[in-house]
Amino acid sequence: MAGGHLSRFQGRGIEFDEVRPYQPGDDIRSMDWRVTARTGKPHTKLFREERERPALMLVDMRPAMFFATRGALKSVIAAECASLLAWSVMQQGDRIGSLVFGGERSTETQLARPVRGRRGVLRLLGNVINHPNWKQRPQAADESESLLMLLQRAFHAARTGSMIIIVSDGRGMNDKAASLLKRLLQHHTVVFILVYDAFEADMPAVGELQASDGIQQRSIDTNSAKQRQQHQVHFSTRRAYLKDLSRLPGFVLLECATHDDPFSVLQASLGR
Image 1 (cartoon, rainbow, N blue to C red):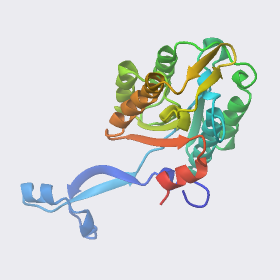
Image 2: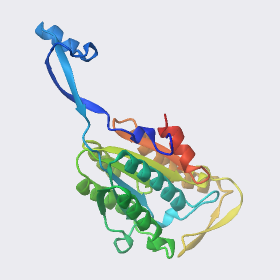
Image 3: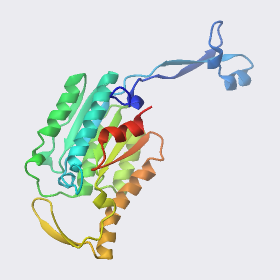
Image 4: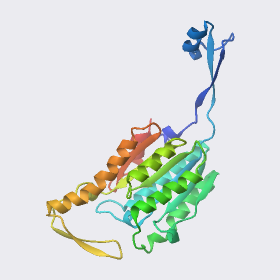
């Protein structure tokens, strides 16, 4: 990130176009030596400016995102990450579309088709700020089902060659979700911002705690090694799925904790 925006999202650069016989004046650095050796005649690689790459931003506002033991709520961190990335896409001149999802059809914001300029960014920010889950959390839906619904929506909505940016805590990651993400990678670049609270990754032994999602309440005995292990395995499992995916071409995984500064995290990961 330089000058307030992400350098890895800057510039579409050039992409390979074709190989043709060498012509006087061609840059020797663009010589295709393999074709030259095979044919016995000098050939040159031609390049062209990469085509436009619209971005589709998927922002998680499900009930579990409204949680933190330190720093800001996961939902707030997600909103900050999404806004920073959206402005970077806009500065590049690409179109930005968005979908803010709350886990239930009744609270799911409609898909905002990609548009160029401030309009796309402001529409994303407005949909995040005005999402009903900020005021009243619905009863948590099945996390695996809601994540699959989101990915399926993105699969059908995104134009080939898009950059799909997912800002989420990854709840609901399973074999089906991983398989669908691999399908997305066949046609798109995927950037996944994993937002989490340190308590999810490593539950400390501090006695009995009361936890609530705004509807139901339960107690957790953090002194119980069994309960700590059960709690932590949920996070380690979804993180493992994403780390496996990050080994594939076109999949970028970033992690941002609730006590982190989103700008610094993105700058360190995507900056020059």
